[in-house]
Amino acid sequence: MVKKAIIGPVLLLLGVYLFLQPGGTMSTGSIFAYFWPTIFVIPLGLFFHWLYFSMTGGKGVGLLIPGGILFTAGVVSQIAMLTGAWGNLWPGYLLAVAVGLFEFYWFGSRNKWMLIPINILTVLSVLFFTVMSMGTILNQKLLGQPLIAIVLILAGAVVMMSRKKSL
Image (cartoon, rainbow, N blue to C red; front, side, top):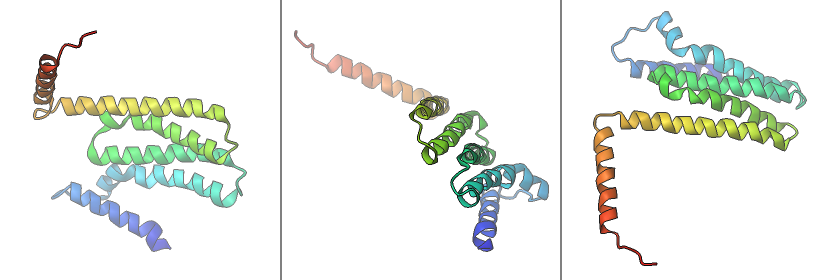
């Protein structure tokens, strides 16, 4: 049990770190610098989930809100630490709140009014992810201007070739 739960993820993360940092030095400070979400934030979120599912017998459904928020924020932070894409991944924190509230809704009393903030936060998160991703794609030298040029050429050709519809 200990091997699967602790040693396996630790070895996996060290392998990912070494793969992403070829020739780099591996020190305790660099491990803490890159894996602080996995070391501190994600286990705390999992602890809240563990408390709800094993200790409270289904009565402490409020534990799932911080559990979902911390776990999702930890995963977003870990991905951002490994890729350096903080500017594109910040909408994940909006999604983290939506995940925590959704867990509260799903395992709680299923109050339909909870779906309003959940949906608002989820839509905002997806919208901002899309905007940030499109900005990154369009700012690429290989994809940005040539992609826009191709789209404009195709749109102009479609407009010129389309038949005039009679009413």
